[in-house]
Length: 56
Image (cartoon, rainbow, N blue to C red; front, side, top):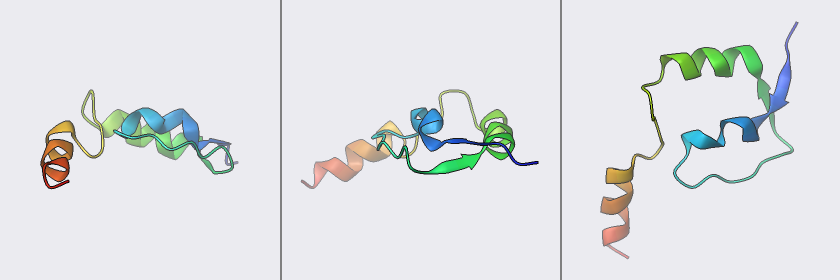
């Protein structure tokens, strides 16, 4: 059985979180992925954000 939860539970993975309360994700899959990511993982990473914003 698949347990769907709001995708907003995983917004901490993103440098600029975008609320998406209408999207649900598989709880087991997302938590398995979360365990495999490095501690403090953020996408895009802060260094990349600095590089991307330099050209603005």
